[in-house]
Amino acid sequence: MKRTILVFGVVTLLPVPLFVIGSFSGQAWLLAAFGYMTLLCYLLDVLLWLPRKNADKKPDISGADALSMVLAGFHFPLLYLGVLTIAGTTGLEYWERAVAFFAFGLYFGQVSNSNAHELIHRGNKLLHELGKWVLISLLFGHHTSAHLYVHHRFACSDRDPNSARKGETFYQFARRAWIESFNEGLKAEDRRLVAQNQLLHPYVIYIGGSLLLLSISLVIAGWWGVATHIGLAAYATMQLLMADYVQHYGLRRRSGQEGKLEPFGPHHAWNSKHRFSGWLMLNAPKHSGHHMQPTVPYPAQTVPPNALLLPRSLPIMSIVALFPRRWRRVMDPLVDQAAEGLA
Image (cartoon, rainbow, N blue to C red):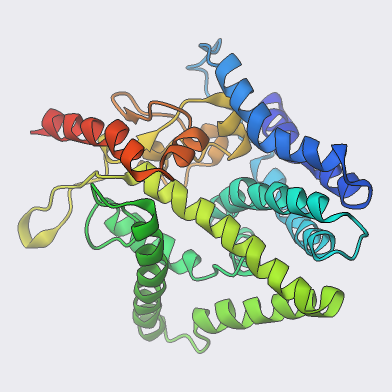
């Protein structure tokens, strides 16, 4: 495995032993896992904000799929370890279980979701299925369909539930995006079912799979386990929706004849060049490039010239988005500037 993938591997896998040890020892180990996902991420984003040597050199993508498979493989035991820990079966104190909830939830929201996003874009069926089942385990399987067949087609338009409108708060967006993405993904799959003469509807797998995986939590930790699983999934999903909110806020693509949208360009997503959070989220913050070339593996993703940049890293801007007035003061003028630049 070459250096490029090694960096992604170290950053994304380092919290795993902290979770495993912390689930039984608690205290400093769980605090270290939480600190890794929050304070350390912020500090290293600041400290590593430097031009990279050989920045124009073609990145090495060998091992990218292997790392994604490893991360997906770790996700499922980590999810149930989190369920056991937070539900109280490993003997931790209440405050330790609370720390565990936020630490595990941040990891699933930032690493597992980013990895699932990468996998569902892969042409290899095994990799695609792995990503789909990670999303199903987080009770958000329909995102597989909504993301591929709705979001990537209609991003930055009113036809995409996951593109936030200017002035829309995150709280308004999250509710609308979850419901409408479920419905629009269902419609897209209904059309594909007829066109491809499929027998099994993907939504049966999404819903049935979620119930199956929830039943495992019931078996290993009772109803507290089910509640914990739902709580972790909700927390992780809110982070995924937050990323969509921040990365497309207020941006719109022009429509031409017969309502056809212009091609997706660098100015249709908000990007971040911060390195540590980029490694942690498999370059998901380099969002314009991903929409312009969705099949390019994450190590090769770049921020295109003239792309729109967030004023802070994606995690920090996600925190700002929780405070609507502050968010609008920061972002609405930037949205207006972006629109004026295209006029």
